[in-house]
Each structure stands twice: as C-alpha cells, then as structure tokens.
Amino acid sequence: MPAPRILVVDDNPELLTLLSSSFEEAGYIVQTAARGRTALDLARRERPDLVIVDVLLPDLMGFDVAEALRRLRIPFIFMSGVHKGGKASSNALGKYGAIAYFEKPFERSALLEAVRAAVPNQPEPRAQAWDVVPGPQVTENAEAMQLTGRVDLLGKQGLKGVPVSLKSMDREQQLRMREPSRPPPPVMQPVVHSARVSTGPIPLAPSEPPPPAGAPEVLQALPARETGVKRGDLADNLPQLFAAFYTAKETGELGLQKGQVRKIVYFEGGMPVFALSNLVADRLGQFLVRAGKIDEETLQHAAEEAASTRQRTGDVLILMGALTEEERLYYVGQQIKSILYSAFSWEEGTWALSFQARARKEAIKLDIHPANLIVRGVKKLYKLERLKRLMKDDAKPIPSAEPLFNLSDVELQAWEAHLLPKCDGTRTVAELIKLSGRPEADVLATLVALTSLRVLDLR
Image 1 (cartoon, rainbow, N blue to C red):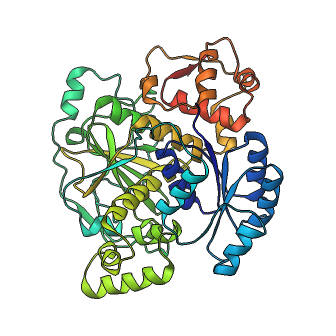
Image 2: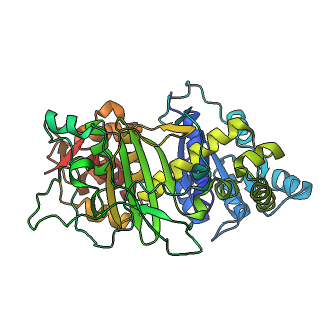
Image 3: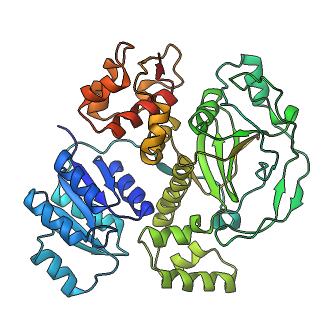
C-alpha cells in the first residue's frame, strides 16, 4: 500500500524544509508549495491525502485555499503566526472545517501527531539518511556558525576549475590522499563587514597558481600536503564534488564561497557529517525562529543572557525551558541540512578542497548518504531554467556503465522507478516527459539528479 501524500504550503523555506523532512522521516510522501495558487494546482493534479497550509501566503489567504480544498474534498490543517487566539482557532475549525489549527511557534511533534491521526500511515517509517548521532564535544564556534579557516575561502584569483572526480585515481593515489596533511600556519586577515555575514578573523591558506591551459576535463584532486588547497569555479559541480569525496571515501573539507557568503562542509570517510555557514541567518537561534520553534522575543532574551553569562544561546534556551536537549539535537541536525541544501541553489561561486586526517569534532554529526543529499538538493533547489539547460529535450538518457552510486542508495518514488527502465538510450528527454505523465520540472529534476549520480549518462 503506497504511503499517504501530504502537501505543505508556506512561504518560509526553512519551515518547509523542516516539516517536509519530519513527515518524510515518518514515512509520508511530501510535496511543498510556497504560494497558494501553486498549492491549488498541485492539489487538483496530485490529490494529496492531507494539506497543511499557512494562513498568510504571498498571493492568496490560506482561507481562500481552504475553500478550494473543501470543494475538492481534501482535508487540511491550518498554521498561522499572525492569526492567534481562541476566536481565530474556532473560526478556522468551525467556518472553514480545518482538522486542526496550530499557532506559530508550535511543537513539531504535536503537528506530526495531528497528521498521523488524520492520515494514518500503515507502513513502518523508512530508515532515513538524516539521522543525527552524538559525537565528541561542541564548541562555541559551532554555535556561532563561524568558519574554521581550514579552507581558503577568500582567494581572489578567480581560478577556473573543472568537476572533481576521484573515481579515476589509482589505488596508490587514493592511499596518498588518506595520509594526514599538515597545512602551513594560517595568515590572519580581517573579514569584510556585512549585515548578513558574521565577522571576525578567518585564517587563510596560501593561494596556488591557476591550472595550466588545456587542463583535462576531469581534475584529479591531489593531496593538500603536495599541492595546497584545490580550487575551482562552482557552476554546476556541487554534486560531482560530493560524489568525489564519497567515491574516494575521503576525509576533509569542502569550502564554498559566493560573494561574502561562505560555507564549509565536513566529510568523514566520504560522508558529509557537518556544515558551517558565516551567515548570521544560519545560526541556530535564527533558524529556530524561522522554523517556528521560538519567537523573536525569546531569542533576544536568550541572546542577551548568553552574552552576559558567556554561555551558548542553545544552552540558555534549554535553561529557559524553550528547548529540550533532544530538540536541540534534532534542530541542529535540520539546521545543518538546511545549510547543505542551500548550497545547491548556487549557480556561481568558487569551491576549495582541503584534506585533513580527521573532520571537525562536533557534538552533532549527520549520517547523510550523499546520493539522497544530491537527489533532494537538485529536486528542491534547481530552478526550471537550470534544469532545461542541463537536460536538453533531444538528449537520450541511458544507464551508465560506471555509476558513481548504486541505484539501491537512492530513494525513488513509484513513478520514478517506472520511468527508469524507459531510460534505455532510445527515447529523448522530451519523449520521457510525455511518457511519465508528470510535470516537466519533476521529470527534469529526476533526470538531472540521476545523471549527477552517474546512474544515467546522456547519449
């Protein structure tokens, strides 16, 4: 029996990510929409079993969406951070017929229980790749989301790069890459101040000369102890960079920069385990506000207390009773996932690789399979124009002779599993879209994701 389908409607991308992940972990199939009209188009086409809709949307009121859902006989739950109080709740339940009404901030677990009550999920929840496991100690830098400086993210040479592939390396090269590197002493340089970016000194690794003209299409990333930090243009190479770490089972850091925004992804044995961002908006407290767990007033009070007592904001929130230790574990995991996902939206910027004997020690580490990270990142963040650029109508997908990932590593929906055998090199992308009966963007995203994994190649 297929899993129930849920549509979540909210213009807050962080809350959408958090809720969709929570429902997926509980075994539901989830779609999201940021606008009311988009939600109604999806509802008419997909007929979800339940819709969770925010009252205040950019184009329509959630109440208008609810009226249309009632005509479609699709049950729904309201969320609102503006319309609060008993009158708003009774109006939503009585006049519009909502199953439940949740005021932001609300308990994620309570919403999940309401969903389970409305749409029971018979299958056992699937084992997901977003489990959060305890690790060694937490540092102040982790709370503040400051960059570690192990990767040179301020290089100004604008080096031209190509996708990284470690698959083509011989055994001796891969073994050399696993040897601990000893980076040179850092050079301190002040960071340009910005309202959106955390400030502070960031150690820089020395720059290296650009690759020679006519560099091969596949870059063999040599160990940092021999060549320094490798760099290149990001473009559409992020999936290949994740795949490179996974293929070589490498431990190290992937630094990403777009303007003054910097992110670092940490890998252990080829698996992404942690991520940092220098955006103030990516800090835990701000993430909790956007996710609807706490309000701005609570965060401000906690931040002031943390500053005066030299504690972490998360610790203060726990002492205040606004957050439990278990919830912090969960939300930091979601925060890290949000940082990882957001990088897939970048179509410009630079990357830098640095290999270390051991990745950054943190109290929280993610167990994320790169295959599902890449698939979800492409599906969530690649826009239609980008998908069309990467997947031309006349291209013919065909199974790859040398896939970077096993197909069993990828979580496919039923329609994707049915489409895959049709990708045999005899049909064009345009033909596959027609055969699928799915929206163009959905099919293109799946094909781009599977080619990024080298599960499919293009003829």
